[in-house]
Length: 138
Image 1 (cartoon, helix red, strand yellow):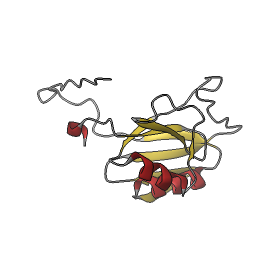
Image 2: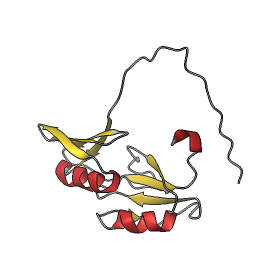
Image 3: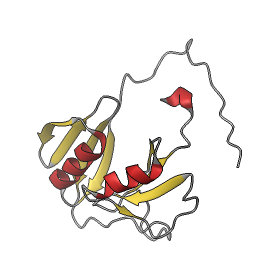
């Protein structure tokens, strides 16, 4: 498989927003925040009601508890993914093992297991560990 990446020049465009936060629905916001801190580093920066916000060097995540939360059922889609993260790694097998320690599990379906590994966080959100992130994105 050949992957072609195209660089886009946005240097002359004004940003509409200055930053963002990725929010994830879940049943237990604190335990999901603890998982993502273990996965990505960073720290819990604050809580607001039941929401727990994690900040890393490169991303802000907000875990949002919802009543009657239903975990995604990827790949069948009966319950949508709700979010999907691709996380770059140089050593896929070592990263999978490290992700399992704080509570991730491998998805039963692995479309391209030599290039990316589909994992599920403790709330069931799919995320991929991959060696296929273009160097300019790092």
